[in-house]
Image (cartoon, rainbow, N blue to C red):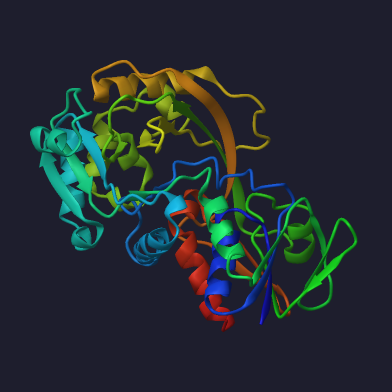
Length: 373
């Protein structure tokens, strides 16, 4: 079988990976020299902890399993089974963490409630003041800016994979084929369009208006911290954002503790991961209203700096870079991904939202299974 994959972000690359793993030939087409979208502009987190119970959690856990297996074969992914800590500072936040630990699927997530001293033993860089921390043992990390490159190098070594950069697919031609902007047609037995947040143009033409929206975020990265941050770190605002924490305790938190005005205005949470070079990737905001701004705003960065410094108990290293990104999210956020047959032999896979880096191996595996690869 020959599979044409359009889009070299993490979702597209994982579809290519599964096709090659099953013995098929892959032609992988990317409109840029390299993918430059949300697949690079994220935390690199394999984030199990906050996922909704049911399909979303099952997908994340399967993806976590696949990431670890692929990481053992492709060291350039930088896979680390580091887990996460979410420090809590008062009784209302602590009650949400306790409710999470009481979930029937808490063991599958690796939830554990730690005292402040126990949390600092796990992650000594957390020298700030807090009362306790929710640990999620199943969370992990990879290097988002280099993961696709490492996967591609491994794919090229198989002899079954061809990468065609700087080609924008403009048309789906009949069954099982696409035409690029150089006028070349690429045909096979199946075509998978993994176009990320590019929802107009080709996608609108072949699929119409789909139930997927675009979401914009702001993030930043620092110089090296100078010491290990041994886990990912979140703050209690993540309880407000992720569906796993829905509970009566969360309702009480929302009613009894107002979110910081800047965090509320920009729909913020703190997530923080240390890169292999020692720097910290920190975010993020969520913007849903179109048209998106073309600039980045300083207030969210100042808020994130204050929160991080309060948890680390020390000044943040110099910020090396700031950026904005846009990802595609299913309007019905309970759906893990939008997968649609748009022509005979042609499928569109998009809309994982902020779950793309986490769930892409399992999303691609499901596509491969459903298409009978």
